[in-house]
Length: 293
Image 1: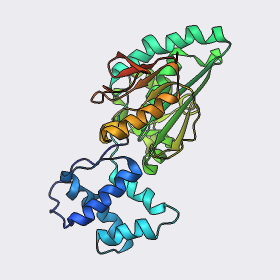
Image 2 (image 1 turned 60 degrees about the vertical axis):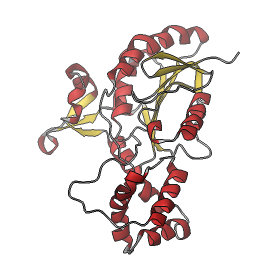
Image 3 (image 1 turned 90 degrees about the horizontal axis):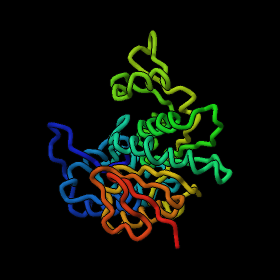
């Protein structure tokens, strides 16, 4: 998932980073990613960005900040900086209660009601998809409820701010131990098992890959290219790294893209105590969009 930096590598010496350098970069990162960094992340920022200093042969974070703000007109280094400071943790069927909810409640509701309106359209969004395990789990779950032979128009949008993890996600290739959480019948149905030089790896089959479109998206962008409406949005373990005002803004924008009665799913440690009147809590970290009256 699109996430905040985690812990320093073991044995790394305490780096030299001045108060001014930390404030500059903290504010710059906040402005461009929404990630709110506390004081105890000071050493981590230096550790994460040291590779970019080496790459550009720069002597200090002050010089690096000048590069970002004065000599990066195309935003190429900004993308590299964001890739460095985000950590992406995800796994197949993470927080399985969400996928049970989709299987037992949300998708059957759509399956029953949508044809009555003359539509067979289903739109899903994995926001903060990281290396793609969430998007492929979502694809498995929806395909189990909506078989191929029923001609449903299903699309999954999978976005992340980190270009490196998106490239991984688009390949759809994972070590066998990463796929261990996928039940064996589903694994054989939806993944190829590597042979020869690919032994120990699995690769998503076209029946999954054809459902998903991977795209880079920064949730702080002024405009988002998607129009919706979405039936389900998963934005899990993303807003926990934002401050409360940023959380409210992002959730409001997500809500605007939900279909009435659509669902927003957050991470288990995220809550919407002040989410506003358009979302109601219906299950563990699941919120339903209430139709406007």
